Length: 77
Image 1 (spheres, rainbow, N blue to C red):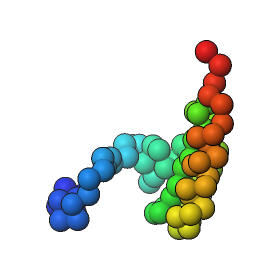
Image 2 (tube, rainbow, N blue to C red):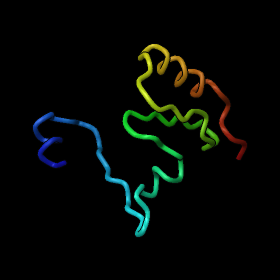
Image 3 (cartoon, rainbow, N blue to C red):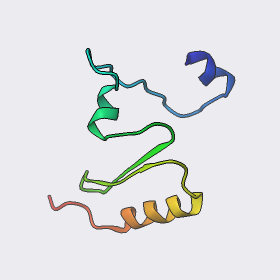
């Protein structure tokens, strides 16, 4: 993984999901019922999962969805 990140000059953080002993899927994949790559999870300002999508999505659609989430009011403090 380190070689791939270096060769592709990825400027973003990359993490490896934590394995769960006795289970074929790592912890985060199991928690969010992820099916593979690419997967997209979008969360609202309230921390609630709003979208769990497996497969590619159009960049413009993703931008619109993120914009809608950003426009929502944050949780009351």
